Length: 631
Image (spheres, rainbow, N blue to C red):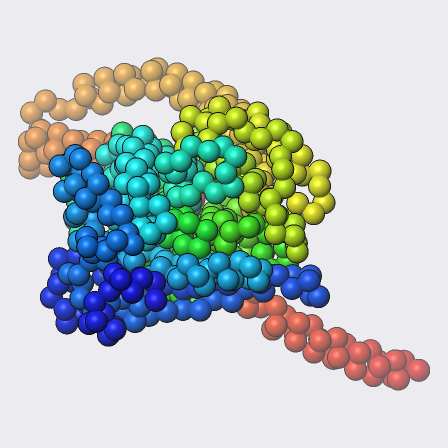
């Protein structure tokens, strides 16, 4: 069992039932809101690959029935109680509250004896807990509940303080909802740069994910009852659109409808693509959002991940992050011949692989309409319109594409920097196949990674380490280098699209300027004609009209001004409408006629082929008959 015998009552032998126990109602989370699984890694030299086995658990079967009971007994001599050792009353109250709300998580820990036995045999197993919700108070709760108080009880409170400081330093304010900057930081209270383990480790990684424009579809279940409630004091990190991610202090509501995902819908003209998207996604992907993945590595055998609630998406195909990690991310690791010493480090990289590659084909070949294809298709559509009728509106649309590509490229560069930080942090844990030892670095780091400044000041050492690793053929197959290579490939494609967008902007501006020269000549001609003949026409018409009445009519002069005003208003209104909306109407008519022509060609291929074959047969028969008559 995860909890020592001295810390349990006799009534703990029955599984917990969070639906009937009233004590669970006061807890922030219960076991029914969690996904728990054991991920087992075993390298097989005969096959030359790593076998991955995932075993799911029902969290309620692992948790004790009494939620109000805690794991710490003050009279127990086997455990040094960190709550009683604190001298600060505020911290005492905080730790007591953490134990009351999150102490039950200790039931989800794997027995330390089993973990040590697995490491001795070369089989690595990681207990993975996933939470489909993101509230910052979850982090200290899970760190406290899953920490081993028997091994280092004095360091747990210090790790909690380091975690709170890390959250304060990396949390960014936004009018669209707070979010974390991309970072990876060790929370260890022991500053030992020579140590192989820097646990606990907290990681926050932004990643792109698709959504639907407008309201979010109904969720299958709600993890936290506070989800969906907006408050200035709320600690939730909500989903943000790609524009909200970049313009965190500005209002972007009026510009959301101009996103590429909202404007470009290629399935409307391609029936086969429409069927594939409906069968794959279930919804049309009409929005691009930025989500965050939090990874809290407690120790070498326990990892907790946090992401937004996306339970309205399907689990197969795996469009939710947890199922994407479970069913897709492990494929790239099965061919790896080098793996890390701790199972939690392996799983951390694979979780980042699943999040960062959510919309990229390099991570999963089966994805339908990936991010690069979406922007490339829209640029092809704009290029077709540019050569047919260049105008200033196309320039604005190209600038919108350029802006979004710049935001995506910047976000992916942050992801690459984060993976490089992790590669340097995990350098001590890399081992060769069959040799469970840590290789010594040529230039070991001179400071611990418990300080966030060490990451920013170690860029040269990190780049040197990565360069040295790339020159080694065996190390190129580590999960971290595979993740870096996949991200770099996608980044190159997006940068190429950005370069093409810049060229299209310049080309469109040139074509518009060329057309404006011809328009200027026509405007000059009509202006001269109007200036010369309009006054003459007005004077001759006005003074040629009778003053009192209109000839052969019983009405007076008022009828003339009524008709003139109505005609003038109609002409001016129609002219303004055609001037500002005529291009849109013409463009829609052109696209409609082009789509209709393609449908006619597609539908007429079969009939045309059959008619051609019948005509050929009749021609051959007629040619043969005429030949006999002529002979």
